[in-house]
Every structure is written in structure tokens, then in C-alpha cells.
Image (tube, rainbow, N blue to C red; front, top):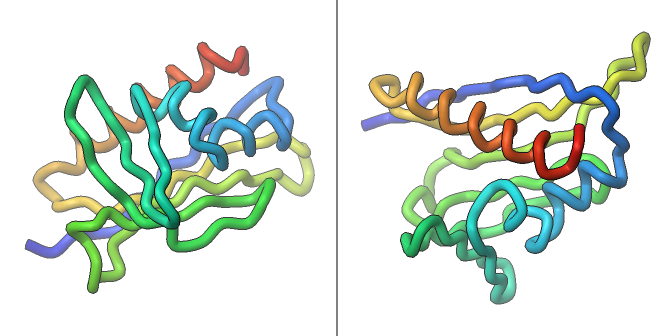
Length: 127
């Protein structure tokens, strides 16, 4: 079943680029809001949620800008997920742009999941 691109933008008040980068660009930061635990071996990040593990390969990252992963089961496809820090040119407000790939029938569930995870990020980091 083919997946389609999903982009969601989350406006963040009271955020700073270094704080956001620490939250999205480091294993410890990701373990604060994205997963219960994160272990890294080379380019492979293993995320743990209540005892369930899933491994993704780090595809690319640019400090203070974005991080991009691909789930191991999606290798050989263009499917990936990315979290990007965006600074609005006029308002200077920061947001996170989440790009993910999803089977259409799971689209609403994935949006709810990202909304929940970003809410945890906001609560834990005070943004």
C-alpha cells in the first residue's frame, strides 16, 4: 500500500532555536517527548514506546535546522519523517514543520499522534 506525504506545522511561542534543536536533534531530547527511550548505534536510532521498539536510520540532519529519519521497514522507498525548525521571516516566530508519510486510511490517526507528541514537547519544554 503506498503512502502519501503529510506535512503539519506547529507554531511555538516562547521557543528558541537552541532549545528546539536540543529537543529534536539529540537522543536525550527525543526521549523527553517523542519516545519513552532512545538508543543510538551508529546511524540507527531505536525508539521505545511502552516496551515496543522501532528502529529508524538517520538520513540527514543540519544542526539548529532539521533532522530526518527513515524507518527500517521503509528502506528502499522515499518514505521518511522529518522535523524541521522554521523561523517566519516577518514575525520571527518559530514553528516545527513535521513531514511524515502515511497510508491514507491512517492519516487522521497519525495527525492525532503527532498532535499528542508535540503537546508533550510543549509541556516538557515550557513552550
